[in-house]
Image (cartoon, rainbow, N blue to C red):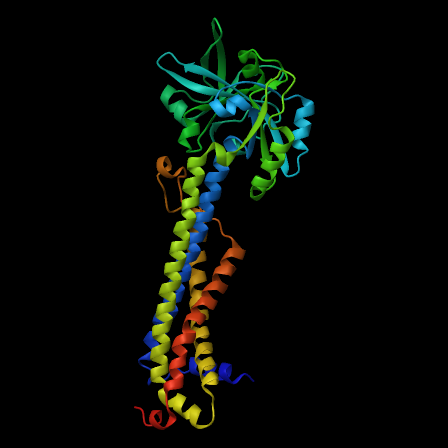
Length: 415
């Protein structure tokens, strides 16, 4: 049997009244580890959930990679590129690309009898992945858009609906400025969405691809660009390089030049803000580990001082300093283990409570979400537990050397 482990387990089970000093110290150390781990779990789950939720919202409005005209990407214009079957097949064949869809943009004005609003009409075709918009639909339904006929169906945001005082099912006029005239279309509002991304909600409404292409005066095989959704976001840089190699700076049959841009390059301010959250998490993790470590050091020193007689007795019967040090480190590991168990219960319990109830609310205008999002990453939580255990034990190695300064002849008389 492992002697240090055996002695540590016996000390751990000692609940005699004579240990009035060490018991509070043990509890403080245990709760220090528990609270520290709970805060770390909550911080990590909230930050991961927040980053992925915002990222998915931004990607949901576009894609991971956009292929468009070179001048349009550089100057925020609206020049067309050829997206015939051959080019669509070429893009969808790139390794890592899961879905490709066309889009065409057209500026216009929505007008009611009382008010009007300038918006950007985004035309989408039958291949449009409506999962994201449908998940954020608050009124009406998601229509099936076409690239060969006008459906006269329109999807707008809640911000637009509130400003224009319209609802799903209402009919509304849209005006488009042409080269030498103004064109009018009448749409039926099929659905109203709300993503809380104000930058997009204020400007983007969805119509069929056929209408925007025709209003722009383009050929049927032209569009503003193609949106590429990847199978794995972590492969963004790798796939972006492949897309760049395949199509960037190559001309189409209308002498327009293909170019590409990632969602991070298109929305640098949002992703820079999300990256800052990682720094906050590292600071929180460092502080919590430090708090747990200091409380455990204090507790271990109190326990060693209180067990001076036992240490002297063990030395008197031939126990080495190393054996006694390992005994107290095992005892500390027992305390840390209890703290980890309690910390996991508290941290995961609060995360699950928030996940299923959304009890903690946020200002959607400032944070883009109405409730605090949480994402429980089991492998990462296990890694946090292991790291906390190892770091807490490592910081105790130094204080444990105090045992080597305890002399048996003096400690046996210690009261």
